[in-house]
Length: 433
Ligand SMILES: Cc1cc2nc3c(=O)[nH]c(=O)nc-3n(C[C@H](O)[C@H](O)[C@H](O)COP(=O)(O)O)c2cc1C
Image (tube, rainbow, N blue to C red):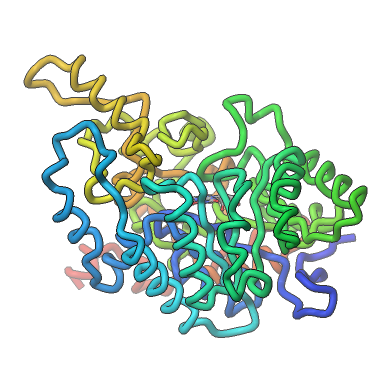
């Protein structure tokens, strides 16, 4: 009894290396960033970067001008409701992805691994072609593994089966039901390659959910057991990695005792110094109460999404920004936000601001950290830190949270060491001193 997560190890191959069984979930856009993923690798776990909107992320961090160039090419189309002419340059996607992944992998230290989260729903005007380029460029750039997410990925293995690293890099899939897993395995059987791991994402996760608005009827433990049973019945020994609502090291141990190989976590790391969210947004996460969180349908992807009700993106009526971004355009240049926006424009009296409530321009608002997506447990984050004299909450380090998951028992949560007095003083006090 009283076991710790550190009493277990994750192995992808029976004779392969061992890892701390803690995986950082991918958090787009630029939330599970390079710095956060690198800490997981350094500490012996598995970190995820995300490939959501990578060209605009490399523009932010590495001074590329991919977005500016794309906008220049399509600026003439901005007033046009028809976005079918707006396409990504596949060479540009590959260049951005390689830069993002190579920079991360070159900085990697320690015994852990770094994977990339690739969402199928990021259809980018040409779903198959752009996904293939993203995956191949990540493999070219030396990523340790790829997690296929936000979609069923029924044809994804076929897209990359000729890549020289297809059978060597770790490739896993996120599912929310045994049905989705069975379908994935059936449809990808032709490539004669199993996934290396299965992330089982339950209804309490952050980001997009693999459930409807009846998400609260489902339960991660039940789905995990169903998937473990299905794999056993089919003589498959894939590592199963549950995710969603696993808040303490002891929560994690409960899943490992059921037979899971590791757990995937995210929300507790949104309030770390390394996480890509701006500090003001991290404070919003700390302050959140249970009633401040909702699962809504404003994402144009069609998947429900969990977020703080105070997310600035909700009700924003900005013009669709597909000429610069356009990451959610389908093969016909369609995105549900475009329709919602023009409906709202038609219904808004002249001179009044346009407000769009049913959908949001997810590209622009995720890129600018205006969609405050979070897991169901976000309101517990305040339990994990100290309140500073100015009323704000002390940010944590990724190492502190990682080790708390790794070593804690009895559902305890270790608070961080208090900051030295000089660091807790408000800026005005510092100026006066
Ligand atoms: C801020 C945030 C952003 C997320 N973005 C993504 C994403 O881009 N792709 C994805 O597959 N999952 C995403 N997720 C889900 C996480 O990767 C993870 O599976 C889940 O949130 C784990 O549950 P927890 O947050 O309760 O620990 C996101 C989660 C959060 C909190």
